[in-house]
Amino acid sequence: MPINPMNSLTSITGRTGQELAWQESALCAQTGPEFFFPAPGSSTREAKQLCGACTGRRECLEYALDNDERFGVWGGLSEKERERLRRAGTATRTAEVA
Figure (cartoon, rainbow, N blue to C red):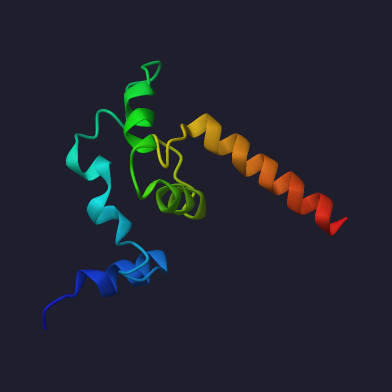
């Protein structure tokens, strides 16, 4: 029985193929990973410029936040920027509950 990669992906990520369709047209799919996973201390400027022109930027960032991606540039944000965004979101949710 052949394996359907979309079924496997859905079981791993909890997202459907349609929800991950942005990956097929993402600009990062057309470039090398060195832009998006630079060596420590290296610039992320080029990756952020590509992300800024990408139509899948929002979905990419949502994916990274939902899946706790800790490395690389996702949705135009670095690891530190995503962590700040997570903390701000947590602080907002905590304040809403209180």
